[in-house]
Image (cartoon, rainbow, N blue to C red; front, side):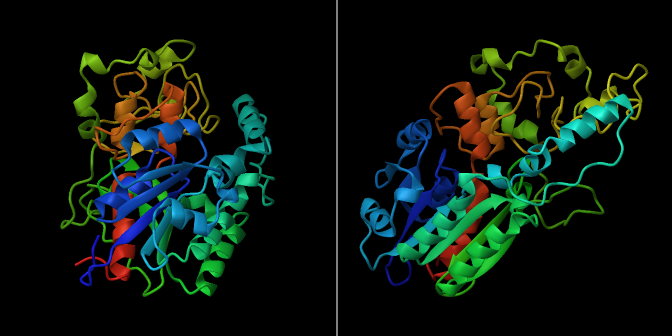
Length: 378
């Protein structure tokens, strides 16, 4: 986007994946110049949707330099640059710190048998994972490329005590390099995305600290919990409606196997707890709190979706309220991708790309805040 002085801001998207942050940058009026991604299938997705000025670099972030980013993005030394990126979240996710030690799974098995004692505490020492250091490479590339602003995104669990040193280190290094920082905790629903997806954003600018974006939609339509001036809470049925025709059928959406009948009788908006004594079932199969919350989880059409997972198991929801798996275009719509955005690869690879993405409408608002801080929006 051009400022009142005629200057433009180029954007480089690191860990670009399916391009959610990049799409948001374009929607905010920025000029997406380069997407950097290691996964070859995701690179095919990026190339298939790239704009006329956008390049795609298939590379390992640890081997990239700031000068390389500017060169590949065709940005001169004095041109304004915003670096965006969501480093892989798996090392910081809640699932990682509950399951990696095996204690939580053992507790659930014992609870189902009636022999469980105290629930184990989440591990306090992080498991060795090379992806944790990618956060450091994000800050390194922001500084090396002499970026004027940045947007960093990750899961909320990066604020957990065992992950917090990585987040604190990122903020400290960038603040010491002269960036003014703003931390935003965002729920995608509040920006019109029909998905309850909470993420942490760190916004930075060389000029002034970015102002957190103003939410547009209610998190809840409960009369005592909602703000009347905001738009209604987005419903998942609205996102899925364009893709209900038979031509969108996918063989993988058909549910069969051990828990198929259980899923069929789970009411919309419920999970496996519908088959527990706690849920009022006459012949309960499960004991409450002995399965993970998204086991047999079924969407309610009049509510937002729960978080879309990148690597769901065979019985991991959310499932469609008509007792099937969600179709790929439905998943993309629930993430806020435009209908014409294409995804490369097998179904598993496309689901992974969608589940790992930043919802473009959320990204748009975050980029807009950084652009405002740089005086690039009129």
